[in-house]
Length: 456
Image (cartoon, rainbow, N blue to C red):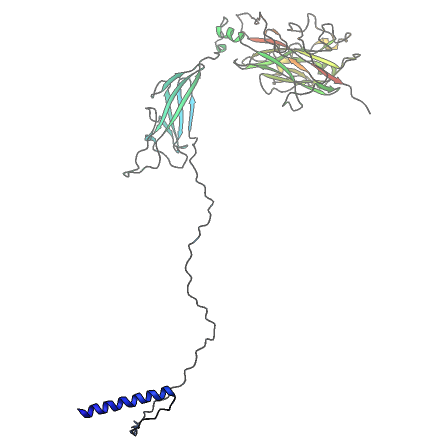
């Protein structure tokens, strides 16, 4: 025990001395080293040598890449416009005297889809017939039948029907391809209108004819452009020009009327003593071409209520003024009456020709007076005045290059749209003969300036 303590103290002193030598720079004395024991060498194993690994190279460059993240596809702008359904013209109505006649296309909506005829009714009435060729359903109903209703306005009687379409399901399926629809069908009948009794040919004056005679009529006389489309704005012409004149009767609520130019005179002024020249006389005979060889003539009729004629421009010999006034006596009758010797429009073109082709009515236009010598200031005037004339020339005013017309009412003369005569009268004929209702009026046109042509 004492020995172990001595060894421990000796080791502690050696360590303390070494520490002091190191602190003061004294070399440390190596302790007594024991001889090294020999190392036993184990025989080494021979490891087989492997060849050196070479770096791999590519003959072609690598083109593969990681795939990119897909981007959302952008939708292109499409030129699209929503087509809205438009009303289809598939229903036609004809309002007859006692019935309403309705025709409906089976393609009711205009989409190429035919409807079932049993699904369509006019009020409470089914289709009366079917046109299989035209694919049309036909309905006919008396004005008071099929659930119609009647309404009355100041001017008309209105019968209203309802065209109803109620589609049924297709086959045994619960689907339909058309929608229900209703179309209002109306028939309008005027409450007031003229009733003609001409086909009856009565031996008395019918009340309707008297009322028609008392209604308003208006005659007019206008200068027209070369194409007859518009009224001529200027009243200036030169010698040799053709003056286009149009006579019209405004018939308003009358039965269709035909107008005639009974006779016309041209004069220097509105004074009764002024020289005058009758270029249309004897109930519609344009004698100017027959007397002077001019190109004056009636034009073919384009409408029954108007008559057109051309007058070659002229001047009165020895007159200083180149102004002319034209006054015509116009007549109007129903278009139901034929042309005759008192109702015609005849021109002399290598013989007498009527404007509507009824040349036989012009047989009495030729007269021996055509060869009579001229009187001072104009040609001979038939004894007793111009045939069928009445009244006096109406007043007109205007400067050179402009003009005015004065309209006449039936039964007398008028001026510039004045009031009708206070005591009008209607031509009367023997009741034992066929009665011709006739209206008359005087119209004045002018002043018209006729200039002389200058020779260079």
